[in-house]
Length: 158
Image 1 (spheres, rainbow, N blue to C red):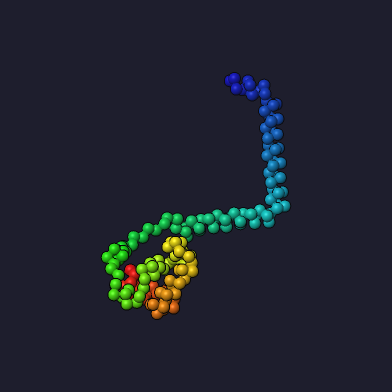
Image 2 (tube, one colour; image 1 turned 30 degrees about the horizontal axis):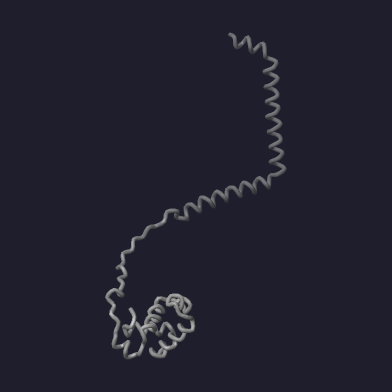
């Protein structure tokens, strides 16, 4: 009962605000309709772009495996043969390689450059070059790789 009394008291205000709301809704609907008609191509292109973007994201999630695959590989562990390595003294004496040249040869087998050899042994670069050229002569080789391979074959280095 109280609701009806209040409604009748504010009837004009409620009808006025309701008519304004309907008018505003109609105007917005017409504005959106004209915008859609005026810019139909842009809206269609935008909609297609959104569809393809969503499709691309979905497809990337399906094609790309986000979980790394763990593979267990069982191999024999590399055993260091240097522990039980005994150099061939007869071959060292036969070739005439000095202890310092043997040191240079061992470090050369580790892959060090001439500069690194000089730093490691605290000698000049020219001295390293002299030792390597004498090693090449004594082992009858022309390159480092040949010298290392021949020294390993003769059991001069591990």
